[in-house]
Length: 214
Ligand code: Z5A
Image: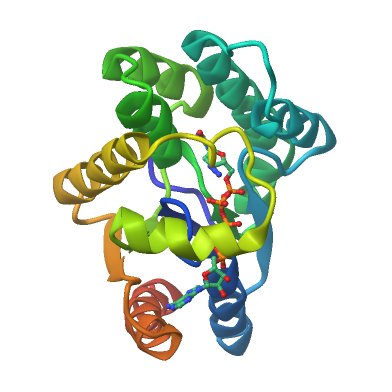
């Protein structure tokens, strides 16, 4: 299903790739182009979904079952889609979202090793065909990303994982990008911020040209 009016843009990547830093840059590009947009994130984006986010990220002694983690991610997503993403797109607003379902395929599928078909079933149930129009995948080798992320202080439950987990997450992201080149733009985020933003600006210029003149 194509999105009815507004465009849906997502930003993805493993730890320390610079999502937060570059979201602000993408916002400035949208604002310069005169695009009305909603900025949001996953897990989160509504009061209920933000509560689920806190529960998902909090380090805890109890081992979280992989299925429980997956279902919480999709519970948050269902609420977010109904309350924020779909109404915005239907009203003609663009939506810029920090992570979406590609993160589930990468973290719960690649990282945790959950069956892809289970994730596909939940995706179909919750999204009913809705997909991002553009996904910017910021990619850095895992060691570089973890070194950058380590400067931020206390680690959440995902950040406490071992390097092998993040290698699997990165591989799953890159595989998805390879399988869906029409939607993904892979950005080499291992270079300087200026160089990263040059790549993002180029992708966004092409996307804006296609969608604003359509
Ligand atoms: N999760 C999941 O498991 N399943 C799902 O379906 C979804 C999510 C949706 C929260 O995500 C967690 O939820 C996430 C997966 C899971 N795992 N974790 N953790 P999050 O997006 O909120 O968390 P995050 O990955 O920590 O994102 P972040 O806060 O946007 O961090 P970041 O990408 O690392 O960005 P940053 O803070 O902008 O950059 C990190 C540092 O690097 C910072 O000091 C920058 O100044 C620096 N930086 C940035 N770019 C550069 C360059 N180019 N050179 C040098 N230094 C740089």
